[in-house]
Amino acid sequence: MVSRKAVAVLLVVHVAAMLASQTEAFVPIFTHSELQKIREKERNRGQKKSLVLQKRSEEVGPLDPLEPTEEEENQVIKLTAPVEIGMKMNSRQLEKYQAALEGLLSEALLSTQNDE
View 1: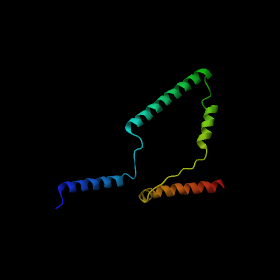
View 2: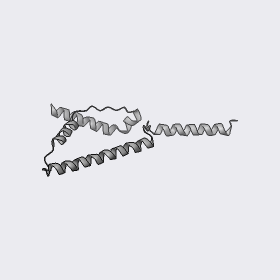
View 3: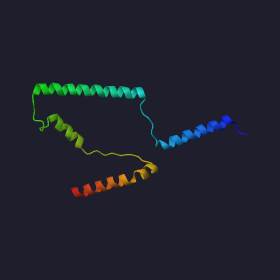
View 4: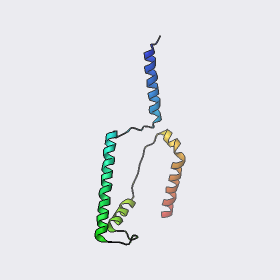
């Protein structure tokens, strides 16, 4: 007979394999402490940015709120530059998101046809 320990170990391995297959290859890149440090840095950047904006508004005075500043115009140009995005999906993910992907592709095809 097979020992109970061996059966228990095989059962645990089987359950772990089942859970791993359900995660769709999600592997955390950062540890919890690293995520906290990143969030802290983002908060500090946000606070610095708000202080800079406050100082600038005090120095320059009231501007027309509809008129973008030169810095904002540069940001808009950077954001609207064409970017190529790629991703890898397994067959299960393709089946799951098939309708959404077909919709995105049809929109892209229509927009390129309209541009011509």
